[in-house]
Image (cartoon, rainbow, N blue to C red; front, side, top):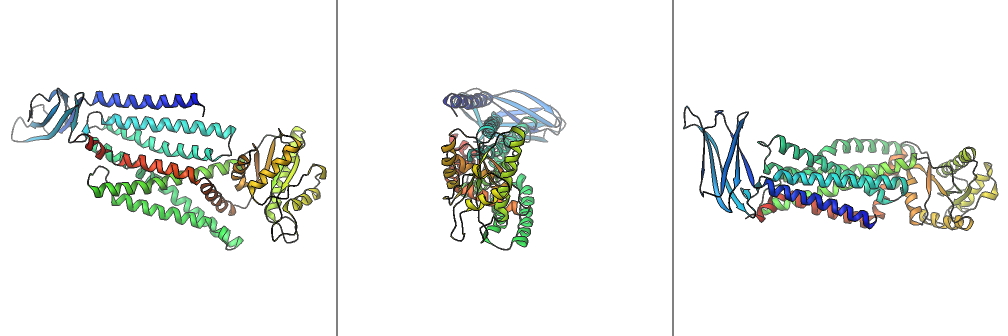
Length: 491
């Protein structure tokens, strides 16, 4: 993001905040009191313990409820007594006692936390979160087109989801404040804002359950076909983590269902609830973002303009021939090579990349070269890279070979479909702007492998994730205690 764009965004955020503060201050000079009116008349009695602080400027009756509007006159404290009498029997009445305090620029506070402009607070939150949603979506679409293989792509989509869900809920709260003012007062608004993450959790709970069941079924199928092994257990582990995390969220939410109580115990339990919900929902958004990016990368068709095709190595048979997983990567590279030659007439060179493992009789690059030659690829366009031991080294060492032939070469890498996105991230880390294709794998292997990729991506970018988790915890904790914070500033 350049400095000009950053300044523009900062100005937009500042404009939203200024608008919100102005709207709150203007609307806060009046306060509406809703009193049940079973008599359907305007025979009302209004008294003040301290005259001249506020004044009644009108009343309207609709659907058995009378709305009284009070305007600030001068700073001070008073108690407003509003009663509606039955004309036939004045002893029958319905009313309210409202402790009111006028401070600052004739701003009315009621009961220590309520004020006339409370709905504009949630409007400001809705505008901020929805604007943030637009920014992250715009960034995601740009990266998807120009710099897709980056953790920032995952983060942009995850944050768009995170802020989008909150924006929808804040918009709904604002609508309730506007259309149901007699039922949705500041207390309910504070509670609703404080429980936003809890609402998001419950909305996503059915998706979590369905996802977990699918992961368990696919993992059992994987174990049945491939046998037990630590690499075949990721689906079960993520399902267990999601369900245990969901249970912890439910417990913390029900332990502290309110959001505006001001006792130390309630504040502490609200903070615990926010920490749990923030971490869980953030990781949930990252999980689904990774799944989208890995699926998109696996199904993406690159342009047919490549100069080199890197084939990422993996374990070979004891006799040095490729195992099915590696064979699939080589076949996918050959398939793309022939498609490009047919569609554009452009011939690409191959860089099979992979060193010799301790239990292998030859480097993986040599095994792949032998396979390529056996399938009709001219040996003169094959340039093996046989020193690498990791995917990052695959990319770094292969880039040196490609740069030695053509510094401005268009490069493609071939791997297994679930590994395309993360391999692209390694390519970016190696300073290579490469595209990728993926060989198909069996359906029951794909979900478990994607979870493995998710864990690898999360661990590799732990500093960024820790920073965003901390930020979401701080913001959600402040929102959960917004009623308490306002009360502290007005007492």
